[in-house]
Length: 341
Image 1 (cartoon, rainbow, N blue to C red):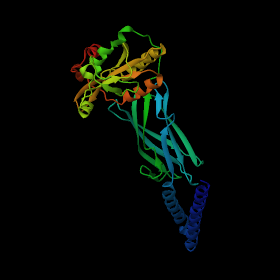
Image 2: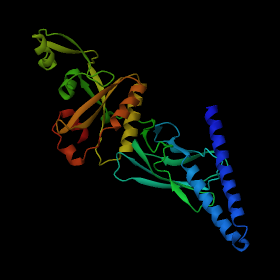
Image 3: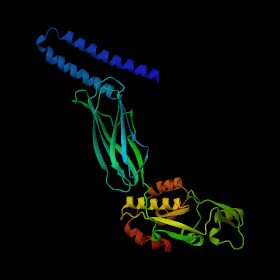
Image 4: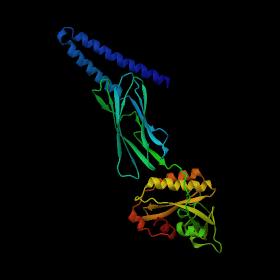
């Protein structure tokens, strides 16, 4: 790092020395034309300044990122941090960039044009506050970055500069847990048999279908048979869930686009957190579109800790929304129909 720093300093000194030598040469060339010296001198100095600007501007290092990492909560201000390293002693006047971002739940992009006046420091940091954002995944794009010379007359676009980092990044806005009342009509309790009827295979705390395999025994249900493995072993093998409960609490997340998604996430996550605080595990359930099936399918995930709740919400927010008509046309299980109607 020290060697690179010394090389940059030497390079900048050579750039300035070259400009001064060119200026002196021009002055000697025009000694016989004293009447034209002021105009030509100003013109040549401006030309040299523009050439020097075009050279050093391409070496400027710019980066964009989220101030608090890629995860924030909807009750706090989201910020974008802009960092500029001149990597030279050239006094740039200002820099302008256009930030475009969109929640994946929304259809239109939001654009912000930002102007930053630069100072004499080689490194400069600027924080852009976006305010409180709604829950969801946000994609950010830097549409343009324009750097202006010391007089503000000429500019150069750094959109495709080799030293531009973070021109595309994302942010996850999670719902903040609030104190809510637990209302009985918002909670649903299913027995193990009802859960199997609704969702099929048992799931573990990670939300994936994990189970033990054993030989078929009298009394086992046919829907637990692992047909693919049974065909390979020429004997019936059944799945056996590792975690089973006689009854379980379910909280349903309705991803329909006809409601306030932000309020829904905040309310349901707060409700789930309160149930965990009471010492009860729970399932979160939702509808997700499956391209292979061509319809909405019912999914669930077992939640036994706050970390698993956060990971589940991050996974859940990656699911696309469905329309009101799609929700009406869902041919499904009694439990889901009662919840979403």
